[in-house]
Image 1: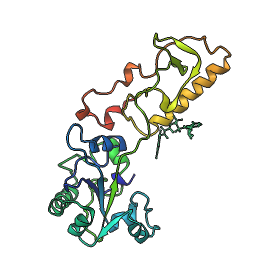
Image 2 (image 1 turned 180 degrees about the horizontal axis):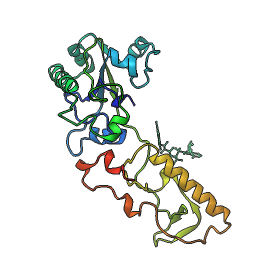
Image 3 (image 1 turned 45 degrees about the vertical axis):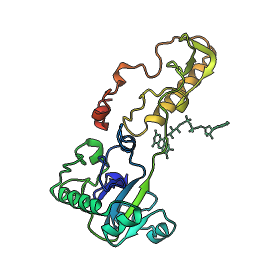
Length: 253
Ligand SMILES: Cc1cc2nc3c(=O)[nH]c(=O)nc-3n(C[C@H](O)[C@H](O)[C@H](O)COP(=O)(O)OP(=O)(O)OC[C@H]3O[C@@H](n4cnc5c(N)ncnc54)[C@H](O)[C@@H]3O)c2cc1C
């Protein structure tokens, strides 16, 4: 949630931004992988003291957290200046200073000329509606400054077992294997590796677990009508061009 709030940006060790930070965590991590270019790992979330107190950052809760404890155990990097922060984090200090200045100028104008932060529905939903002119853009200018290194993790899978609408696992010939059901991360995602929004994995897991249980309760695990395979719905086809992918592509779902 902190990534969409005004006054945070993400950079790599180059000191340059690489993504619209307010996009979904899925799109954020896709950008970290570099899309064929240089991966940005770790990425550093950069903010100032006013931001971290108001919105929190990662494990640091707004208002109440004792920030010093997070700095002492190495979770957070803190410095009185942008250049000092960069040096402590191993980021290019000259580039980071330039990036912050560009970001701050854009924040004051309310338009992110680099990545369109705040221009999408999901961005604004995760921003601060009371912040103007852009709910996702605020200057980074109140020391001390903070950097939080972040690396990708897995929350779901893309490819898995082929199943039908009753969660029955399909064999090579496409027929259900008697008595074998699967759901959650064990099956091919109905979203095929794209992220329409919160609940994309748990929602499908719950629905297909329910359908498996209902089919089992029917007392005929081998029977029933196979009306489709998970992931086959034409209405869920995502754009094939990775560069054009963003969360708003899925708002219609
Ligand atoms: C930090 C985080 C945040 C997330 N937030 C969201 C969210 O907001 N919305 C959303 O939709 N999804 C979210 N997800 C993703 C979602 O939680 C997972 O995709 C989902 O839990 C997968 O469900 P599952 O039943 O397939 O697997 P799991 O939930 O991983 O369940 C598998 C179970 O099998 C057990 N197990 C493993 N091996 C064995 C064994 N040999 N014997 C017995 N038991 C075993 C495990 O202990 C576990 O309990 C999040 C994931 C993470 C990590």
